[in-house]
Length: 258
Length: 271
Image 1 (cartoon, rainbow over the protein chains, first blue to last red):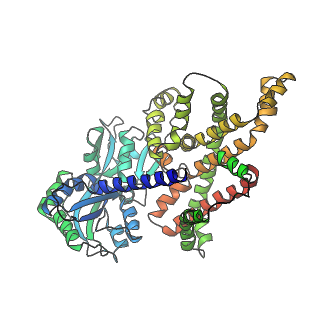
Image 2 (image 1 turned 30 degrees about the vertical axis):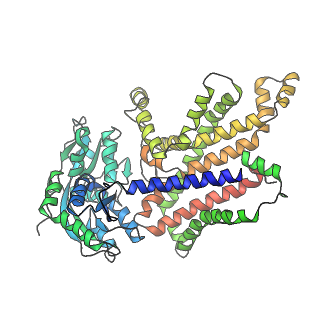
Image 3 (image 1 turned 45 degrees about the vertical axis):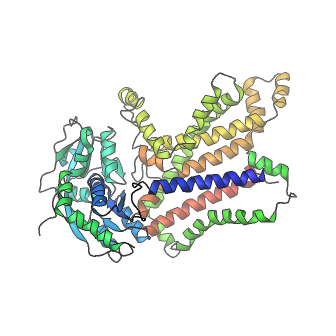
């Protein structure tokens, strides 16, 4: 009884460890020595673009793998402050990059983004602009004010002098798109790129330039990283014309020229 | 439940090999050290100020409303379900029992998505609710209660069913031979006899509802005063204001601990 109890515990532990090892170890068996890995903490809005850049980086860097941690930039900044093992941090705003400025190298802006109103496919409620969001008939979802997208949205609404009562403040920008694509909400304010990434389920309504807000995306290597060279290489890839092309294909704009 | 029963039977005299104290100590440390970490980082000086903010009070109030609401829903429909599972023999009973407990093991976020697809504005039932009555549950306090009940109800059902199965049915038979009707037996004999199990079930159900996060934020969203319960407030605060998050966590910890201590003697008798 005792022996079988201990034995089953040990078996479970070994299985768990093997499974964990497998998960980390899916490179082709040709990779001889322990190939390195970097962890990139990136804003949720970068999900699709960075997922495409990942394999390109691996191919160009001798099999060095990239693991992404996508979340709201504010969450990532907190994680880095608490010592999470990040090598690179790509934020959707400068505010959250500033929060960790003592922990990262010199940030460089690599992209910018604008806001759009996300509505259900075909825009059944006929939303034309920010004004329409103020009417009480629409269920509007925003990102929480702590999230960059939420703060930008509030900025845009303030500029336009519009007060919106959201039915929910989601904890990241992708959740806003999800709520609209599921039909739970009628409209939300998100990045242009999120509407593009939303594909067939949602449509975007443009916000005129005088009401719009430009989000700038800085990227930096993390000082605590044990792999500065590879971290820098990833940052270089994002800033290269190759990286910029990928970002552009997902609807990102080049860094503002100023 | 079964654990306490076993402990009671074993009594306080039984000896254990001293070697077991090592892993036991590890387990205790593993469970207790994170709490110590929370206490160590608590901003005691500014705790009062952190907690007196309208946002925290609002989240606390909402958490109480929602968790108690979830317990009420569970009592209303979960206890009858436990009676059916314990007392009525019908084909597929094991399947029903498995279904009942599914949401205990389901990741809460998955539960939230499932709730959206069922009770959302475009969901299986939600569509009809919306069209027929103009009721939409997502983004409402009722939705948050529903999400918490979905996750917490199994705890009450299981506990109650176990109580019903363990009780001595001869008391019911005696009452019946003395001419008591079914409702009278239920009220005067059965419910008092299973009160400890029912109480433990309520406590577990309530604690689970109070801590619910994944299903709530997925199904009901996150709006202060409407659906932002304490765990959601902790999560959002964690990303910008660690001190506020710790203060909020401390409140949840104290409330949970207080309930456990208060209920312990009454519902979890030891030896």
